[in-house]
Length: 326
Image 1 (cartoon, rainbow, N blue to C red):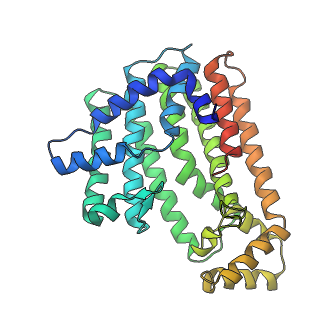
Image 2: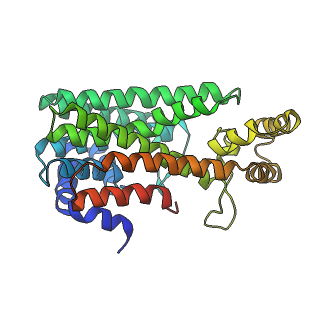
Image 3: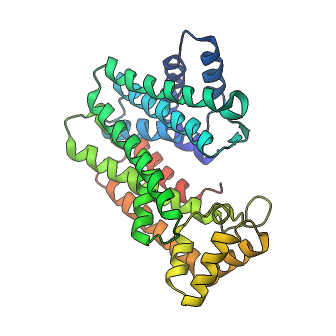
């Protein structure tokens, strides 16, 4: 059995019902909009975020979920989808998960409006049901994701990101949404237990940090075609292996790398040389050690919860995040 199916097994029933509810939550009176949202729903990814919501809720409440859990998962997925649609416009990207993006098929104007529609649907789903506590969790996540993206853009121009700033960027950009999923799952079933909600938020944040560092490492490890991708270098993104290498080299080497990333990032040979340089300086090993530290810290937060298939699935999820191949 594939690992993702194994993680999903204890929440299979919930996930099936969720998909139905999620599809309905996108309904509109506009035929064009329905056509586009139908296209989006049928090209969904692994649905890791709703899985985090349901597994957290069930682990905390001895296997029970309520309507709030479904709404929380739907809101997260609506807002996450909205950000992806907008991201594709911002990045001028024509593909998403191997399929054409909304902007590639229907142009930027429609893609931006569809993203806005999904965002408002998510907000209204919470407001109509008085889930203001859940809405607050989501809204904070959206604010942080925007701030993280802008912080990265601001810093990338100068290529002077410190390790601390890098953690702040990935905490906001990537980890905050997974943190929201886990705190939502907890808050949906136990809104009054602030400690548990906060502990699960922290758990999600740590997983998100490990997840992003794993993504960084893919840039330096052999891809499906047998060679490192170097995409982050081409896009002048400062990732942890590169930051570490720059902090542990001579001034001359540093000037060479920065020049390569700034001015020769389209030159395949130079990109390859930068990748080799980062490997030689121990950047990959350092990033891997950091990723494992975040994973370990996350697992510690689950220790006190009673044993259950849901807890096992969450532990499996944590390990999957750092062992995945893509």
